[in-house]
Length: 485
Image (tube, rainbow, N blue to C red; front, top):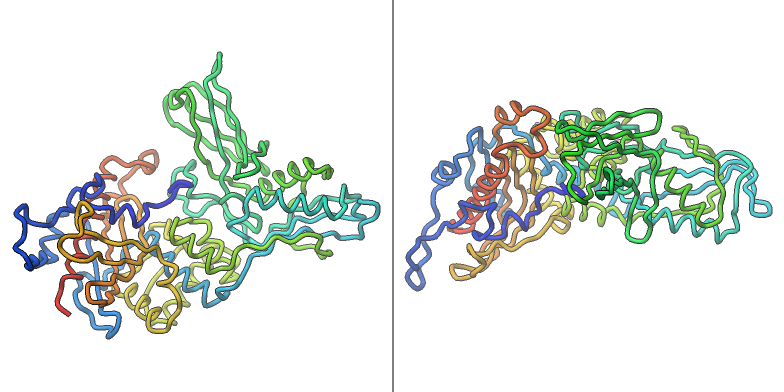
């Protein structure tokens, strides 16, 4: 996922010319007779052709009537991967409300006299997963405009809004950017930008918190280039710092990548201190607290409304967003307890039997059946909960992009990808306006569990397996769209 982003639905539905869809051409090599549409292949044939191993489960229902049209292993619970974010979105919308905003504040514990805060300055987080360096830069500018130039007391970073989570899933490689830490202060999706260039001797490396307008260097995250072949990266954490090494053999002349931040409150506090200094505001090094101090608000930064945050989460599959909004919705003291609270909510709300271990689907221990996902999506449609409006939308066209056999199938859905796990859940509008609610899960859990840690970022055979899974999902949607109403 760039920012480690999961594959978007557009990649799934891009057509037969895309290498990721080797099985997508489903039409006869002979042109069909005018007015004739070839009947769709049966589901068993499509599954056999995909040759995925493991388990394939799906369910599809008529959105208007709720009638189950076709199913296979519909009660089998499999890892939902990022399709879990659809449930998280429903949970957050109902619990927090579509207009909820995260508010990050600068508080003063005493009055401001002659530009100096007579007490402490507090950077107080709300757990905003979308807070960026640019937003902190604007907050620093507003603080300067208010006349503040320094403090008599401490500079405090308040991370109490959310529990400290060192990483989302311990079964992921240490260096992948889609598995960061979380806290009440998050920044840049809790990733730091590592860049390297070949120098006369060795490499020149930088670690920064770049955004669109500001690119401050970061001291709390450090990188050392080490002469070795494997492992490519190693990580060691200390009190508020992240220490990395990278294998020299893996570096070319120049390059960059995002790495996860394990101490996000320290990261955020340092970046704001740097940006404040650029505005002529002198602050001491931050002290991290997890109990919010009382104070007068000097500057406030508000996020976009929750509905827009969730729209981007579902489009780009940002794991930290799912975890932050899930934790904010539950108010639980740990990620595990928060996931259990969401499971209890969705099971009670819709009569399901899900089991989530997080809010993003990154952990392979979450379990959802195709039947339960379809039940939740049907209820969201029936009750007008607004999920369809924020799901990623794509038109499924004929292979190669030529719309010769039929009009395109409009799909609003959430994808999900883990190693040897692929899911797709959403709503497809077939010709004639019939809406189909579906969930498709493919998982070879034995192959997934056999992967050693150093093979989990790019497992051998993983991309080919994923291409076949996506081709199967496309073919099933085409089949269902062609079924008589």
